[in-house]
Structures are given as C-alpha cells and as structure tokens.
Image (cartoon, rainbow, N blue to C red):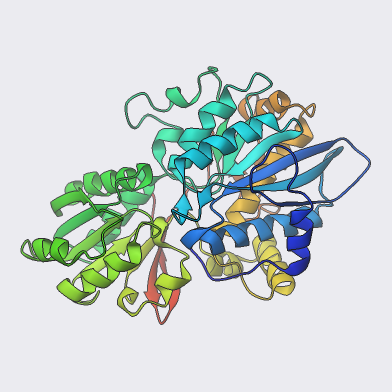
Length: 421
C-alpha cells in the first residue's frame, strides 16, 4: 500500500535499541519520564509489498508519541514494533501472527497492541490476547475491515474471538459490509455496471469483502457472473481471464490484497480483456497504497475504495489531521505512503486515552474501552479530523467513511465520498 518511506537512520537506531523483551524481530522507539512505564506496540507486516505502508504507519505513530511527550496521563509510554510477516511469503504469516500474540502476552509491561493490518492475522491474535490471565489485553486496529471481528458474519463470529467472555478488540475504520456495499452501489450508479465477475484471494478479508460486494450488486440489479478465488502462486492468469472474457463482464472486481500476486492479476486482466476503460476494474482497500501498483501502466483507471478518508482529503479538511501530515512531511521528507498511517495514529489515540483512564494494568486499559461510556476522541484532537467514538458494546467506531479513488498518472486520485447505508 504505499510509497517508500525508508527508515531514517536515527529512527532505526532508536528502534534497534528497543528490540527488547517479549517480541521477535520487532523494533521500537521510546522516551523516558518520571512515571510508570507502559509499553504499547504495533503489529504489522514489515516485509513484502506492505512494508512501505507499515513503515509509514510506525513513523506516524512515533511522531505523534513524540508530540505528546510519550505520555498518557501519569504514565510514560514506550513504543515497540512487531513484524507479522515473513520474507518467504512477502506478506503476513499465520505462524508469525500466532507467535506475536504469545509474545505480546509474555511481555509483562505491554498493555495494548495497535494493529493488525490484515484481518486474518487479527483473527489469530485476538483470542490469545483475550485469554491472557492478566487481561484481556486490548487490541485496536487501524485497518481491519472484516465484519466478523466485531459483528455476526461467519459461523461463530464474533463470539469465538473472545473466549474470556469479554471484548478486547476495537477498530477506528469501518467494515467491509459497508465497503463492499458502497463499492457495488458506486459500480451501478456511476459506472453503469450491468455484469460483474468477482475474483477473491481466498483469504478472510478477500472472501468477506467479495461477499459483501456480491450481495449488494445483486440488490442493485447487477448480474454476478461469478465469484471465485484466484491462486496467488500462479505465474499467469491469462487462461482465467480468457474464460471470464467469454461471459462478457463490464466490470472485474478484485476482492483481496495486492500482496497476493495482485500485480500479475492486473497485468493479465488488461492483456486479455483490454484496458480499464474497455472493461472497468475495481478493488477494495487491499489494493490501495502500493507504489508498485500505482506505477503499473495496466493499473491506470483502476477504481479503488478505502474505508476512511484518503490523505489528500484529510489535508483539505485541515485541523489536527493537516497539522500531523504537515509535521510528518517536515520530519520524513514526504507524505505517508498510505492513508492508513493517520488511522494508525487514531488507533494509538484510543489506546492512550484508555491508558489515561486506567490503573495501568492490562485489565484496566481494556476496561476503559469496553465499560462505561468507553473512549471518545473529539474531532479537534482526532488524527483523522473527526470524532472517534468507540462503541463499548462492540468495539466498532462511529466514523463510517467510504472513499472512491482512481489510479491516474501514477497516483490515487480522490473521486468521491460514497454514502454509507
């Protein structure tokens, strides 16, 4: 998801100094202070196609923590990063997510986790953090959009993620039932789509957003010609698209993440079905923020949806979001590679507010989010420029935005805000 913001040497050195207790190959940054030290962490894919997005998100969090003096109420806050990807996969990895979850629990001073980026990884980690005998341990995601983490979706969801019988998972981004539906409505209303072929990456996120798109497309009167998985290990999808071509779709919807060989998929779609004017192509936020895709000639014209507001809209809206983005550019020399970076800060704001209201224990931090009035970040303070109110019953956010973007001249251009219904 995003353009290269390589770690600045000073940041890297500070990070290396913190690769301490509990974590695997993670890094971090911190500052001192007179209060009790609590550790908060991020859990992101730091290798593969999502590396740039994750680096930007961690850098934005470091910047924000510096600006608040690495403090939350009377507590000093240290930031530690975990990598949930492997070089071999170039993406998030099930076994690494499981190990990270155990490491979070084992790190005695750690009280909350920001992440994960991928919903499938969250579904592995949340139950482990939930069963922590000193917790539950709080997780707040900036990017997980699969509905089942917080609401009824697939069988047993969401209850199976909370074995302790109490919630410990929240997010500051809206969910794929909204994203998939909004995308289908845009396809019908603005692209005049009549026949769509859906390809999903056969993962939790891709299957979920593909199902949401399919259900709404049918309601909109769009003929769904198919919804089948693509094999991320294939070297060519020419035969797949040759089969699809016979059905004559006017839209291809790619439900999944770019990490799963999305570049080859886009190339072969254009090779067989023509450019994205001849047969339009659309994808969810799993394809947003990848510099490689943005530079890909065959990506020109691709429509994208994002479950929030993109960076250029946050800048245009001014306020706390613009200030943070301006400060980010001044410190790192470029804008964040991903629109998710500020949502990462928003998730940290929820965690810091919970720490401030707590007694400094994992249980106390989690209780601050899931009891009483929960956590609200006012609009004038929120990193995304609008109020963030976490529902203590579900962990979902009150901020529900879906943006439609389009790849133009190597950039993700804002098209419109799609109403959520």
